[in-house]
Length: 278
Image 1 (cartoon, helix red, strand yellow):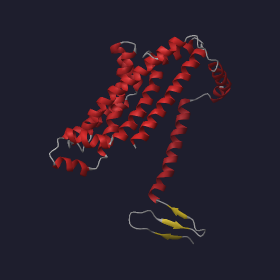
Image 2: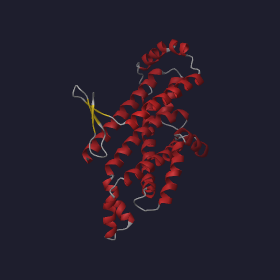
Image 3: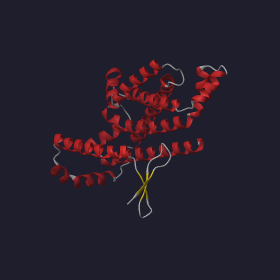
Image 4: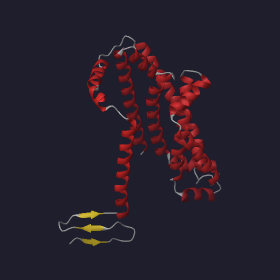
C-alpha cells in the first residue's frame, strides 16, 4: 500500500511508494490534461477532414523538395549588388519599424500599466484597443498601408509599426506591472511625480525585460520583412520571390543564406546584451 503524506498548507500532496520514489501530484490539474488532449485530438481530426489534404499527392512530391533545395545550394553571386541593396533595405525597414514601435510601446505601455497612473478605465481601454490591433495579422496591416501609401518600404514600415506597437504595449505594460508596489509608493511619498517614478524606478527595474522583448520583436520583424517583401513591401523578400518565380534558384539561395546568417547574428547580439545587463 502506498502512503500519502500531506505537506504544509498550500503545498502539493506527496505520495511515497514502496520503492522509495516520491510522486508529486495535483488532481485538479491532472484532470484537465486528458480534456486538453482530447480537445486537441478532436480539433486535429476535424481540421484534417475539413481541409481534405491529398496526402498521396503530397507524399509523391516529397522528392521534389530535395531537388529544389539542391538547386538552392548552387549559389549564384552574379546579382550580388541587387541582393545586398535589398538586404540593406530590409534591415532599414526592420530598424525603423522596431524603433517607432518601441517609442510608442513605451508610452502606451506606461498608460496601460495599472500601477503607474492608477486609471483602471484607461488601462483597460488601451489593452482592449491594442488587443484588436494584435488580432489583425501583420500582412493585413501592410496591405492596408500599401493602399494608402503605395508599394514600397514606407508601407512595410507603417504596417509593421502598427503590429509592433501593439506587441510592445502589452509586453511592456505587463513588465511594468511586475515592479513591486512598495517601490512606487515609497517614491510617491517623497513627492515624485508619475513621470519621474516611471523614468527613475519602473523603467530601470524593467530594463532587462524590455531589452528581451525588443530583441525578440526585432527578430520577428526581420523575418516578417523577408516575407512581406514578397507582397510588394520592398526588401530582400521581393528578390527571393522574383528569383524563385524566374527559376533563378542560385540567386534565391544566396538571398536566403544571407537572411539566415543575419537572423542568427541578431540573436547572438541580443543574447550578449542581455547577459551584460544581468
